[in-house]
Length: 372
Image (tube, rainbow, N blue to C red; front, side, top):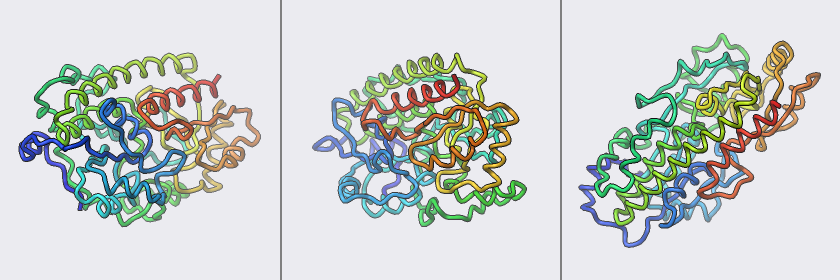
């Protein structure tokens, strides 16, 4: 079973400050997480990507090279079983001695509950945030910058105290499982409740990487874990994390400038994966064609979305490269709304440190172009 992470101050004490003879081997689940890890490791080493770009993380068969990367990993960073329940058992089997970090459970992560139904009310996510911090209004909260090059990094360790391992995440269930007992109080959603098999497992929407606030926080989490494993390079890891957070602030400014000319525009997305992006940039979607990644919408749901497009004059419907474009064509039937493609995983981008900011920038551009 994968080693449960202790608070970093205690971990460092137990390790006695002993560094790896070489730079630790690191694995990351999806390309956006891999990008953040690569940014922190810049100039020291490079992480391995487990789930290749363009593939859905919900159902994936590891290639031999990817299984080998997990077997050799000293550290693993992943969103967690809410996104990829199948990966829990895989990590436990292939990387039983690795230090495993579930980013969705790390301290300071903004977590949003799943939305229900095909249509969203403006800002309906505001009441559902589950945040482990008291800063909620942007990137002014990056009070860790001054610690970027500190020699003593123990004070970063409390971010990991809540990572209790993986036994309690139900890893024997897969993304296509149709029973979500924790949502059974939503029967009044009718056909949308039946579509719950498309939701990921867990209480929270796992697409948390689409919040630059979360990404900035995770840079610190990643640097702290790498520094415990490789204290000789701790200064570089924290300096890279600080530089990455500054780049994140610049990215937020850029994205707001891209979106400002089209604010007030209404749009529908293919599936409900974007509320973290919507929340960070105060730009809510009007609805989603599909409730989740793993299921097609019912005819009733499509009709509901079509009615809102017609009634409210929605001007943009966004498809995704991973899913059935024909469903977007069906929804647009009889409508003059524009269509575009938005990609939450960076499928057409080269994996590496620059993928994450390019991903968020591309999403903003796709939305703005569709709404013009």
